[in-house]
Image (cartoon, rainbow, N blue to C red):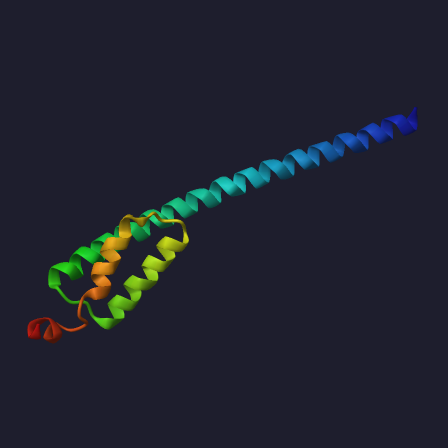
Length: 104
């Protein structure tokens, strides 16, 4: 009888530990998904803000172009959809100084 109780108690404990671990994995996934969506939202907002700014100026400093490209790569790498691709391409085609723009 003692062995029966110990055996079932161990099974019960293993079940509790497994359930707790699965619950923690689900919580972690939910948190990670939320962080990913938040980061995508922030990156998208910054890409739009910067893209509109530099398209309006009709040029973009080289350091800003590099930062914009890296933000776009992060956005795309996190699974951002293709709606930002056109804006990214426009910014990447801009000259890197106002003098280049005036010569054209």
